[in-house]
Length: 137
Image 1 (cartoon, rainbow, N blue to C red):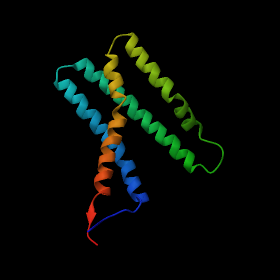
Image 2: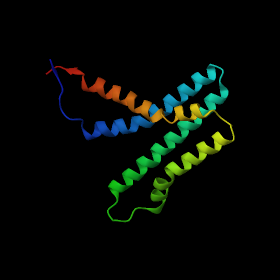
Image 3: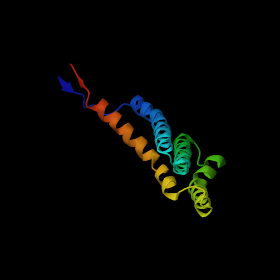
């Protein structure tokens, strides 16, 4: 028996890329439900807001990078450029507004912003499991 030591194929990377938003969404939903189940409705709403901002930010960043790699000219589509440039200012403005109005707890919103990190960790575990899979030769 041997372990497979080949580099990850393109199709495997595409599958991982497709799974990542699903992991983030599932993690956000489960954590929000867990906080809500613990009886903290405002904290659950704050976490959900932070997670939503983080996931939208991920999608916009992914779209911008994908477009940059696909574009054949030096000109990037205006819509992609605007999304890329406004990602952080819009997120900061939304968080600031919610914080200043004391609508939701800031800590919960900030915790939700880390949902993509959790999604990446889950995907890393999946990749490790696939990488260490023992195959017969």
